Length: 86
Figure (tube, rainbow, N blue to C red):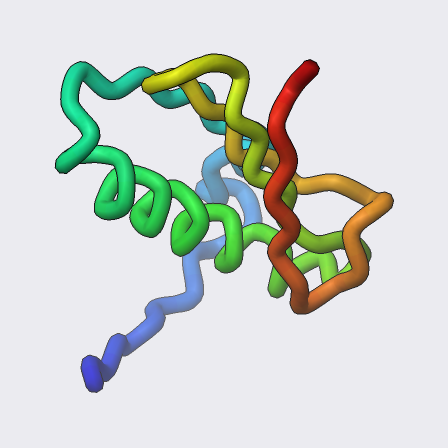
């Protein structure tokens, strides 16, 4: 577990917040990379989904080695679904 200390930045100096990532496209050259790559992408989107608490995550296999991991409103918050594109 890590601990972070936050410092309040004066309003005039606050940076413009970048828009959160809602979809990640992945392409793998070997099967051994797939699991770790998908786990990392899902973990990144879990952080975004937790802030919004409005949707879950959909992992879609486009074709062998190609995937999309995205926040999806058809998936209940707190859940991750998998699909295969037809």
